[in-house]
Length: 151
Image (cartoon, rainbow, N blue to C red):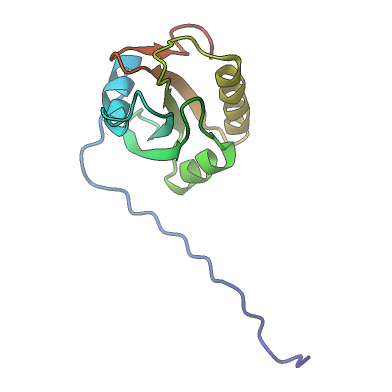
């Protein structure tokens, strides 16, 4: 091995270029639902589960929305590492989780509650607040974990 050879390592660069566009203010679960619903296509909301995350700044303005996963009829993946990696990249201080139940069932499952608390605990280490978790159904209704006291 040549001791003078430079190892091939990827360079990591960091930049932050926030969009200058209007960022909607999220004051309630209704506000969150209004903006997040756009990421659940009307023609597939009753077919398969989708998990999206809204990222907010300190003033509760929506920085952006990330479609985390599309799953099957009965479930999808919500990886806390991916959720937090996006939060760190956009310097978010708050997040709102949302996924749909194609069945139309507005009840939070035990798995829904467990993943929400797992994500919340992970966020606490980074001073990021989980403001809500919404479950949307095809009939145009939603359940808010915050309003139901589940968060």
